[in-house]
Image (cartoon, rainbow, N blue to C red; front, top):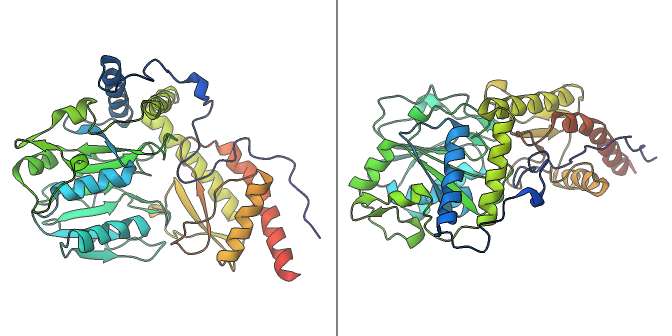
Length: 378
């Protein structure tokens, strides 16, 4: 027997963890287009890139001590640019509790051959942060996008650290308070909490990172797109809208739209509040269903953006069928867990999602669950 369809669908069923839902009210026709067809090095091109940087600084509350640059290759390109240009000056510690953290382990160990100290935890868990040696450079993800586990705060990072901290913060910025005095390097892309377009990364450098760049030369060759120093000095233009390679000005305008929307909902505090409301709405659905659970068991380290759920008796086939039913019905897109994670669901609760849509998702989860159970029993 087929379960009856719920009466109402989420108005915006976009729950992908990247690229994420566009901001409410988004319409490509609303984007400024005067810069399109112009050189990114023209006056208008540089002005729009600088505006994007200024808006990111304003919304993030980033202090003047930290520089912001738009770089190629999304968050991955930004983080690897930081690794290739700054690592090797001292020992390295890498933290990994999900697939992207493991990616930085691979880069440090197999590509750069730095023999890092690796501190791991299983999916759903956080590694022992007290075990980190801050005389080394430390690499970590602030929010584990594929496990739903985040660091609870920056209290575990000492002010008198000798090494640099490298934070992959792509699903954390614009959602949490980031203690910038604790972070020497941070990276993200617009496609997460801002709901922007992919392909471009953002690199944030604190003063200690700039000092490293200007006093240390890596032993390996650097591709042109990674070079941040010229004649022993930081290439300041990169952090003033003079990008290393040609950016998509359409993607820049898309990011400007998202940042202006962010200001309209109260800036960082408004974005954080929306994330918290969304996470609470999803948690309410989980608490009401015995067959759903959180992969991240500890609420203190549970993500409020990329929320990963366990499903009773789930394997890859069940999750594929479950997510496929919801997509076909137009009720939820792209909610299957990441391929390297334990079989489950992953529902984005970032600020561009509306809590009402998450609430409306509940009956559809019940419907899909009933359908896959009926199929299994047949």
